[in-house]
Image (cartoon, rainbow, N blue to C red; front, side):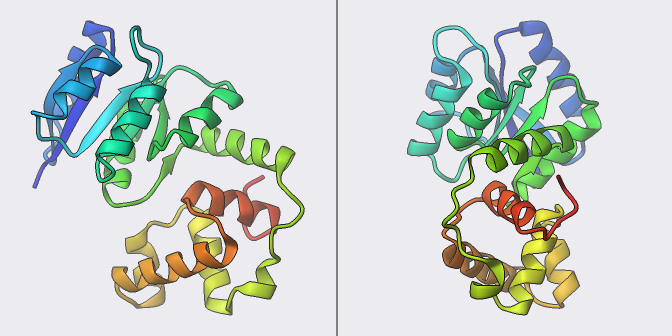
Length: 216
């Protein structure tokens, strides 16, 4: 089944370029286009789509507000941010709005296609530059009261946390541990519950703080 993508950007020529590129991917199709946050909120009510490719800086309603509204009303709909912004505080605000991934507009299309497939597989996609910015932000304001990894996680959970932080998706984790994807999700939920962290981004930042990953 093809991934139905809804493109949201206030620049028509950019939307047309994305439509052309996405049309060349055998597993993707463009479900529609919107030029503003308000327009996409209306479109999702009548257009069947799996993922919204969301520009952030738009008139009328920006991508952050539109994402909050979409996630509240359509929690299963994937939202992938696409923006030129690289300010750390701005990106943190976008992530806190509930997006499933963040891609900068200056990347090659191949990375965007990878991001779309990663998000649709149930994982978070943050490019290397974005991951570094998020980790730095977290380390600057991390509370001291978080539990120590070795106090609350089993050996397998620590190993899985490390692999998650290093970018392994659910399919790769299942293969590494010789378990089903459903079992991976059970383990991941258990890790999140024990650490009181409820997103892949938070798990990654925690793993960096605990020295479980090479990211810095």
